[in-house]
Length: 247
Ligand SMILES: [Fe+2]
Image 1 (cartoon, rainbow, N blue to C red):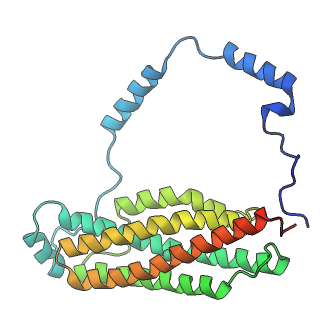
Image 2: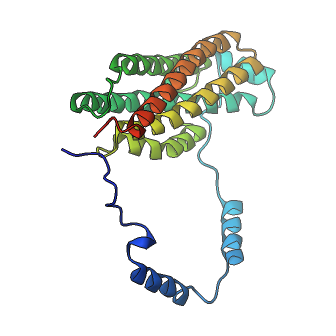
Image 3: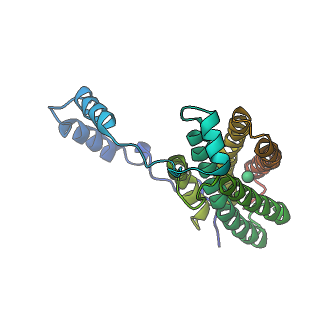
């Protein structure tokens, strides 16, 4: 089955049909609303932003116990709540990360079997990364439990980061996407993940959680390997296609 995009079959541009393109341009002018301007739309958006409620709340129990209690006594303000919010965010991301790698492994198996690329994708490395995402997920569960926070609760930033990553997840799980296209989405996810682990290390250090900071640094160094290798493979995939070595 021919899978690669053929040149000359794309009809999305205006050059495909100059006559229809002219009609489309004149139609766009004709049906542009005479009233209502960009400023009006912005005013409406501004009002909506000002009135909006926030996305959920951080699940800190009213009667915080143990580590979280002493942390909340020691650090005034929102610092402990922000930490919990970010722990929950990473937890959700790493859990999703294991699912993403499962989808990538499947894509890689099919790509290898069909010879989509002029080289074999190292599936054992993807399996290794998959395992590490699972370990990071478990680490975050342990940290939240140690603090006395329910790790199954969805924090506001977990919600937002899931939404932000959902487009990349769709790319990877779409049966039509090629392995290189999936790798680009994967690179986006891993770059975000890397920056987030760096921040988590800093937040743990700010709160004097040296044990957690040390464990997060280990996770960060593993994530740095993920991002480096994914980036290298992605470049290799794209360049191998550019050289015409496939299909
Ligand atoms: Fe990763």
